[in-house]
Length: 269
Image (tube, rainbow, N blue to C red; front, side, top):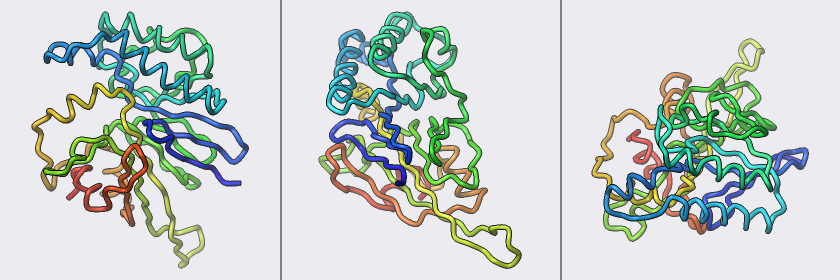
């Protein structure tokens, strides 16, 4: 049996089952504390209420599926190097509540400075270079990990992928992204090259209040702009990988974008 990676529609949660039948739920970019920015912008929300709604989603899915392992792909909190009062009050509560049901694995992201201070004992805080399970590498996406010879999939967050198409009713909607990569490699036999394939899955942000900042952003998506995903930019421009195909899915599972749309999202036109 090979590993399985399937979005749990209509939520930004990825179901992963390894070849030895271990099951995991995966989320990314919880950004607890971003509600403070929303309040400053005039969108009033209590962080406590939002955290409870996020917990309700996860606990409902756990009750439905019975899965007891949870991987968080970084940016659990919103500030970068500091810890805000909102984060002090809400990150431990979020994790402690989940620990009653889940075994938790956290891969730190670029917003998780000093995150250890907020985590209770018993949480598995992994290295930023990622967590490897059954030829699948789980990373946040802000650093360049080692791409081992047996790696088949990379699951990452960090990008906050959304549809960018002016005039579309889906403009600004969060999406799943799947990218099929390949490159020609020498397998150790002189004069004999082989095609190697690798799949990248980009997980949407879990905190729906981030939608407000993405939709209101005035940043232009221009060609020749540096990629927001350093590891993918490094693979394409320095390690000779190429994109064979790419797909963009809404949270309800509809395909709404292909290679050109994904390239624009990645600033790689």
